[in-house]
Length: 447
Image (cartoon, rainbow, N blue to C red; front, side, top):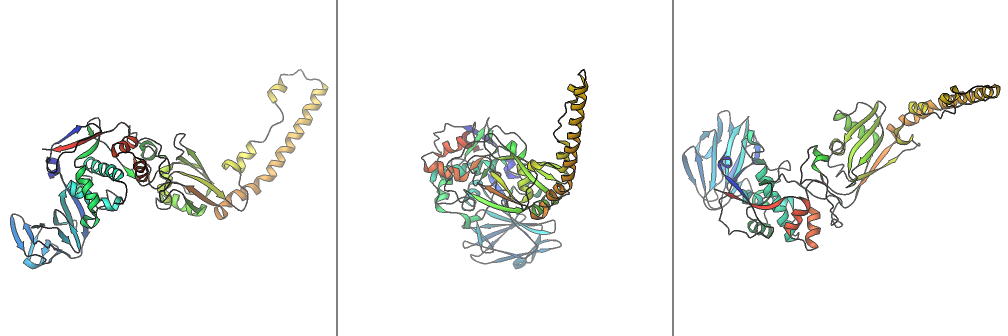
């Protein structure tokens, strides 16, 4: 892959970074999967096209559409009656259209695993331009946009070849970064991509493993809490600038049956949900562990495992509290009826009594205490069955209301936190230093 033949030198710079002029460094090329289909596709360009089949080039007039389809032998180019394993389509002096969508760079059309695949090959900086409007708003403050651009560039460099086994670097979905080509560009963000050309975040001389999310809800989370791996600069930090964020507060109500079904699909439980308890981070207040009480015992999950099982779209973040609502009062703290039976208050300290030199009064007192103890146990046993029935009935009548803040996994850059910081006067370097403590700004130079 061309990217792998590049030599990357990451130079640490002062936070007051001076940007090199445009074109001072060579561009890294990235490969983005645009389509995987069995349907016919068309390509065109206002500036005309060149189609390369192996080492042979064909020139195509401006605005003339070309049709490509799948055959058992490879890709069939209808206009030339040519079949090849792959072809490359390049605009002579403009963008290339795939259907009605324009893209910079060139398109590789190939057959792979019984599908027609279209891969956009273009410079990294042009790729970033095609992600900005899908991941941010061009109306955001300039310093917040710069911060996001640096994070997006660093993410791309760090994750080059994420789909290497499939023959490209990134897909165009949220799995990598959303990419929409020229339609996803904006003049303002394009200008900021050029102003920050080559600038990345580094940690100990290497591109940092950065991530971002929409809103933290007031405090970010750590990579260790969410994904179970410790990263020195992906830690919990306060983010108090998000009051105007679109998901500053949210509320979701789910029945115990809905929760049980979601957890069963993940294989976490095979029973009914009786109660839910949470353990929070002392620092951020985020849920780091969820204890699900069932009629077969208690299951412990991480906050992220629980959120993923319920659904990221249904449970927007791990910054939540739970309100339980049921028609009958449940046993507190998830105690079962058996637990209550075991925890009967004993009125006799047998060890103390065995050490006494008994007299007649002691014997009478001991027998009275024994009778009281028996009566107390009988009373608890009489209440065991009703309690158990009431506790299990929550599967039908109980609902859980999740009241929370924020949107996303909560690790790394909070986009709306960056917006708030920028509005308060922070520079993009200050924003990045806050959300990625210990990282520095640097530049990638390609030779």
